[in-house]
Image (cartoon, rainbow, N blue to C red; front, side, top):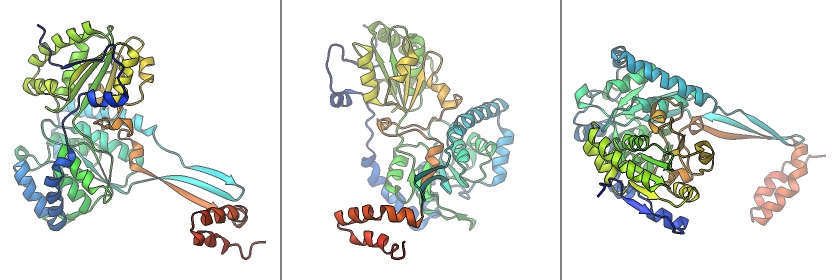
Length: 444
């Protein structure tokens, strides 16, 4: 009997509605609301006691309380000087490629002449100050520094601070590779604070242990665990947020032309992030599913993080969906709305164009998700948990606000005044109309 790491759901020959698909598909059992009661006191404590509270939480959760929240600039420079040259070159390449892609996302001011003498101009104005969260946990994420910082810089953000958890093994500072990435990109402000308390300090601001100001931000971006996500949800309004990123996800839409070694490798690559990471295969080919299962057993046993990978692959969030046709497969992946979707089928480019819902789509055998994690040029901060049905990944646009400039001269206002008054009366807001007619007393 084949050892199936991925639980199978067979949809072949079944007519399944969109609602039924959402219920059938594997998902991580994560409830942000369930941890909100634990997170709320953390936010309240930081609001009331500032850095003193964050240091207590850092000591409790991270095992160390940094001497100051703000990382001294000398330590940033030291981290960059000590960085492995190969890692430095890789980060530089990742940043250069990301910058190339994100510079093409710039938005131009658009002026529309609605009528003679009446124009509306849309300006794109960057957020003034942003907080960029870089998680710790099971891995080190200098790539997340790149993915947050580059679009913010291209957007023209004036002021940014990177937050990352203090590390007991590094003297209460964030991981040195994270510090080096910040220094390489010209980020001069880094705070050694993580978790929900980091989001609270970014939102409320405070005074550091040396008396210097920790200025609050207007927007927070970047992935984190469920506690970080809950904090972002609870503080939304005080701060803007990019989204609510949960555990990472990969879905692969494949047919019999796919290489099972590639498919298994990509499923394992995301499973090593976290025991809650989701790896989902959607395929028209049962022989491929069998071959992938065999490969998963071999590759999971050979990888460094075997226990973590096997737990992720066998969890309720992972699975294999057998479908009767490519059309049904497309319906499944659209219902799932994966953070990362790979298309490994015949004519993959055409199939990928038919996908509606995904954070990012990786097309064909030579575009694995791990390429996008680092050096494709795309952004790896992407919507999870089905949010790709309505949300986008991080981009230059995430750091911009569209502001309309409305300019009308007297003649243009006169010509539309009757319509404004009619609509104001229809809505029982007569003062709205009077605000227009008051300007027309001297009109010719």
